[in-house]
Length: 510
Image (tube, rainbow, N blue to C red; front, side):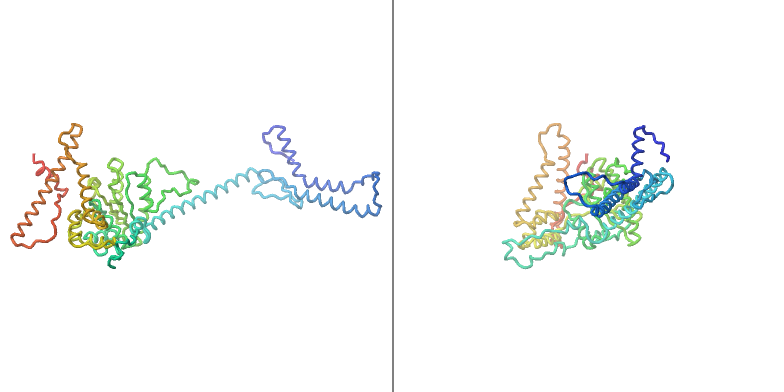
């Protein structure tokens, strides 16, 4: 027989040859051993003091011993495996003694190469199928994030903890047991516009909601989302750290940023050196595909709300993120597939966005007027299961805190509304003095801060003068017998667009 010409040493070749011959001829060796022991002469009887069996007993017991030896030899031969050399081309001795093998070709090298090619092809085909399935699954998950039903932000906002009745509430009237929200019987004038935006009836634009903290921007948005069960709407909060903002955006869009993918086995990993801005761009690219598909089905755009966008840092990184969001908002508004809504308590994001905003619309959310404030604080008082207050107590509380919803909510839930309102006023006064307090004899290193403080007090002084002029006009109308509304005068305001001219003409005419 021939042997492969492998580069082995002489001793190793000899061992391989010996092993090959041993495994190949294992069963043949067992059969030859059986024939040898069956045909040899019996051993001569040794003399012993023990009684030897007779000739008849020898003839009866000899076949049984030979049968036992034959069965033992067959079991040994059948238990020894046949030798199968690499490549599958070697003899495979079966139990019947016939050689059988499974091979594609006559060459072991070609068989090994063909097996490798088939295995790699199966892995490659499976990888292509998995990548296609995963990409489709990503789009389906993002589409589920805009489906009606569960929304993370809406679920947290509407899942209020109910206050248990206390001993003081034991003798209260049954009207205090109303669990309806305080906004049930009060609808602000901006609510209709917010409803149309959230329900996707205002395509072609994106919106910026500007208003002070606690003025009710988020409450109106959540009311609109609850009315439509968050169908076609998703919401997330901004954060100074862009990595956290990336995760919050992924949670709102139900997008994992390929972190749950196993495609690293079939393709190279995407570059991650771009930071969270690159991941957010990837998420928006997927969202754009879903928005196109949804617009064809429903005929209305999706709505993505970015709440508290002023939380982004006012530096290069934060301003670049606002620009990235605005670019997508402009493109999606132009095509009518998605409407973005930004809400901010501060003015600086709008100052950045107005430079490139061609389809941007601004909604100013102000405090409530006195009539709305009285109605709101009354509803809040009833919803908080507190004892009802008189009209005079409500007016006194509103006169101290104004129409800011956050302040009205704190006062309405307090046991003593007047004391709580006075406390809030003192806290705000202390904060204002800590920020713009004037120092008579200051050092040169705080001169810039004192300039800012002096300008702020000049502006506040001008507000007081405007309010006094409004009161004088109203008093003159009452003396003349004209009909005047009983509502309190609104706080004076200076629009931002007119503020530079007003500043130079009135505050600093020099």
